[in-house]
Image (cartoon, rainbow, N blue to C red):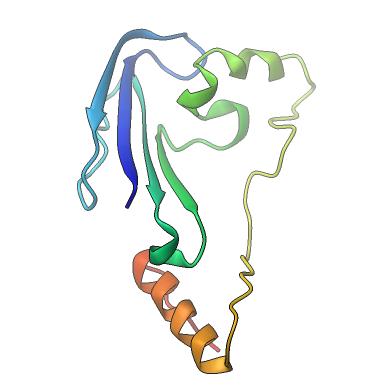
Length: 126
C-alpha cells in the first residue's frame, strides 16, 4: 500500500461539503457509515501488490450513478444529472472483468490472479 485515506462530510450526496473530516484509513477497518453523512476511503496500491498501480475506493452511501457519492469530485456534482430524464451517469457504473497482461508463463498469470482474488476477497475460477 502506498497511500490510504478517507474523508467524511455532513450531508447526503448532492448537499455540498460541510464539516469535512479527513481520516487515516487503515486496511481492514470499516468506513464510518452514519446517517446524514457522505464518506469515502481511498487506497492506492503499490505495483508489487497487484502487478500494476491500483486504486480502490469505497463510498457511502453506496448508491449508484448520480444518486451516489464520490467525494473526490465534490458533493454537488450529482445535481447536474437531475434534469437529464432519468439518466444517472455519463460513464460506466459497473464493470464485469479486468484484464492484466502478465509477462512470463501461464503459472505467473495464475499466481497473479490468485493474488488479486485474495486481495479483493473475490474467488478466482478458471
